[in-house]
Image 1 (cartoon, helix red, strand yellow):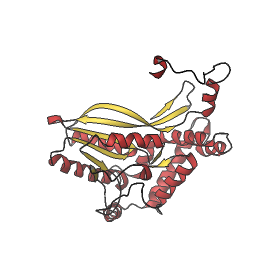
Image 2 (cartoon, helix red, strand yellow):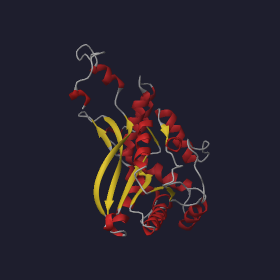
Image 3 (cartoon, rainbow, N blue to C red):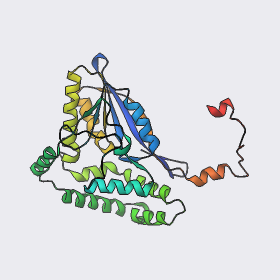
Image 4 (cartoon, one colour):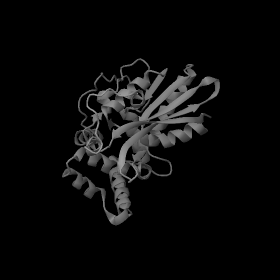
Length: 280
């Protein structure tokens, strides 16, 4: 979700941690992820991950792949290149460099490259086809935008702003508001490999972990995967939605706002110790 101030300006983009409960004390948490975010966001996730008996994670990779601490080399895949480009432009860090995948409770819960390619071929899908469908969805969304102003103009204007990283984050965040429409553009009524089939694979691994007696499990997947997973946990696993908490992935507060708060009209003591109320 995008959090906005009273004027409607985006101040933060947050991802959900949604807990589901079942019989015999079983809990399954869906932890939504964005692949580039604040360093503090991934630090909070690493701390959260220690609480689970099994941490199921996404990564289209061969069986037995080990992700070294700090991540591997730069990806040459178009999606990976796009993510790294966003990281650099927005002043953020990349998930693969920050999340510690070496922990013993981490369990791979995704397709192999061969399984992914086979599923795409069976469905008649292609990366180029998905790209064109996504572009079409984006153009349609811009045509319906208030005032007819496209995101390209917003991003272009951000490049000439005194705080371009903040303005670019806000421009991208506005696009995330239409994430479900964009995901729908990737597939048909039966979904798509990139979302639906990978979700099925992840939940197969969940069944195996539950079968081993694990009762406190989490699934760490891109936020776009969660709506479909939510429905499957309710219908296929008989779990019930319990709680939802939120983590800030992108801080989009304007640095000039903080300076204004410390102006002559709103002085902030430089050396005075904070009171108990301020600490709270």
